[in-house]
Image (tube, rainbow, N blue to C red; front, side, top):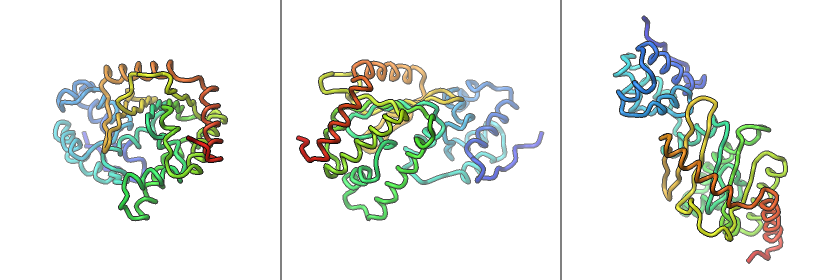
Length: 279
């Protein structure tokens, strides 16, 4: 049987690589779990590669070529499909966002990137990298705005955010920047484009105090969760871990203000910032 053809990198290379991986695996008669065992990864990880919800890394492409005997196909085409647009640890997250049908995001300190205005994003990036050239800051801001175009679609992905009240009170940039940022969120909620809830200070201790998380679901492939740290983050695909963190998110929702109460609080704070009376 002839080996797989080289693919045109301009025609959704990640999805095409996934389709070729499925073809090569099925040719061997292996299940996703069996191929995963041979490569010391989970079957769900193989499923994410095949469905295009996860990027194939060059070092893993070499392993696939070896075990599936594909003559260097995945190594060649994985290199052509590389997109060094974001930090390496965040590449998979951006690509997963683009494929997700449902995104649930808990943000303890900052407005989530997909909901940020240009001015807010610029202020965040400038604090994160105080010595960076202006053109670098602008490049980062534009990258965030490109990601946010996901929400231009009227219905998908479904985006559900729980914002800690601290993220609303922490002034990023000027009061005018904060007023604009909160009004932007309120506008998305009023247009029924996002589900937005605020976890109030009055909720006290809660199970996600250690950091942010983003849960993503897909039409094909198992769900993922992204856990964010100070200078990096990681994607988790372990079913037990994802299920536990989904339960954590459900607990946050149960402790949060209702959508109506959350919207009223956000709009009131935006008004305060606009008049510079925010404490």
